[in-house]
Amino acid sequence: MKLKSQLNNVIQDAFNKAGIEHAPMSVSEASKPEFGDYQFNGAMALSKKLGKNPREIAQSIIDHLDLSGVLTKAEIAGPGFINLWINPLWLATQAQEALADERLSISRRENPIKVVVDYSGPNMAKQMHVGHLRSTIIGDTLANLLTFLGDDVIRQNHIGDWGTQFGMLIAYLEMKGLEMKGEDGSGSLKDLEQFYKDAKGEFDANPAFANKAREYVVKIQSGDAHCLQLWQKFIDISLGHCEEVYEKLNVNLTRDDVRAESFYNDDLANVITDLQKSDKLQESNGAQCVFLEGDEVPVIVQKGDGGYLYATTDLAALRYRAKELGAKRISYVVDARQAGHFKQVFRVAKEAGFVPEYVKLEHIAFGTMMDKGGKPFKTRDGGTVKLIDLLDEAVVKARETINNKEDYTPEQIDELAKIIGIGAVKYADLAINRESNYIFNWDKMLSFEGNTSLYMQYAYARIQSIFRKFDGQISGDIIIGDELEHRLATMLLRFEDVLNRAAEDASPNQITTYLYDVVTLFMRFYEQNPMLKEGVDESTKMSRLQLADLTAKTIKQGLDSLGIRVVDRL
Ligand code: ARG
Image (cartoon, rainbow, N blue to C red):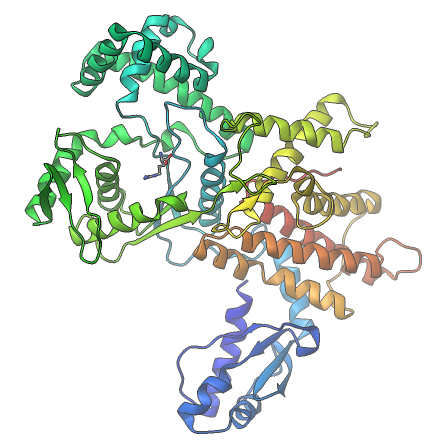
């Protein structure tokens, strides 16, 4: 349910009855309970235009306000704010409906659009490292969220599978005879980082090998069957490593979502000729460039030796996504350090007509993960931290926090450790304003208290345990009995507004902040409003149980969009 729109409609209705014309305005959540549930501050903005005192305007809105449905009370405060109280009966009915609906009354968009979400995009020459974590999980959250809200989402994994380094890698693969190993890529290629180092070592020490590597670069590019086969083998193995990470991360990326850089190879020459046709191209120092007005550095699309660049491929990909896939919104979840690149290619794509004007192009930028000392995250000896190692460590650490569970089988402990450990890493990341850098801190993320996944999972499991204890049939209605119940129900009904904003701004932390508010409020409600205690009358008990149930379902759905699982017992 779109709570805000419901309230806006009531206000609009009062405006109409009062005969006041105005641009669209919206209510906002009240900052304190004594200010009601929502506030409307529009009277101030209108005062100049109407030449009237804001309190006077506020009063005339209140005079025309319908207080028999959604709202029950409205009051002028301060210079002309209107404080609004939601009708508890209406609230109860809405909560009841949400509980009965498997989508929790969250509607699917009336006008869904095609959205391309470009995320993860690891480079095939190397192991995935912690820098890829953020793109992968923020992108996945956005894709999950938009899918849930009804958009037609196309996930695109723009993997880096092309470039001169692959000549060296496949020459080395051939030399070591590793292509003979099993499909799963077992053998010394388990560690791509090491493989790359070894290949580079050979390249630097052995001129014959270096020549072969260079020769292989040319051969892959000209479509030589033997080299392409080696290359394909290498990509398969490397992608297999990534898929292991996706699986551990509970991320929805499959091979079907891969549109690698190499996918666009055949179109790169067309990109150049089409830019030429639209009069965009200029030669500078032998290279083909696009100069954008106001920008000092041009976008280089073809080097003097004929080679294409990262930007050329992205231009081809932009055109493909707009024209072939029919996307109306294209979201790139990529490190903030690539902001300049995206700004430029977006402009070129629009100016050259590769992407129609109405298509929304956005760079969903994110900051860097730092260690406790505030430096970019590295291993003890200064190397990059492999993502898979970090995730394995998370599971080990999670197991330590739950080790005293005697009534669990070892398999259950394993499963629980995975859900908690991976959830903690993801949540800690998604809970940060994505554009900020953040400090990676195991203790904080694996705490039962504060804005952590464990706090949410714990609350969820707690509610499930109440139901195990209750072990009966729910009947009767939700009744809003006191202030805390009123606030909890209002909070729960805000869920759709929160999800929509988080999707619009591509900011998962709006969901985590909301979940934290929900659970904090629920914990207070739970302490003060007993459910199963002796002496609680039947209808109150039934109502509270249903509010608890709606809370649990909201937590579950919220975590689900973040790709984090819940457990029934903790
Ligand atoms: N492979 C790139 C990197 O690791 C990310 C790709 C992002 N997507 C894109 N269409 N450029 O930096």
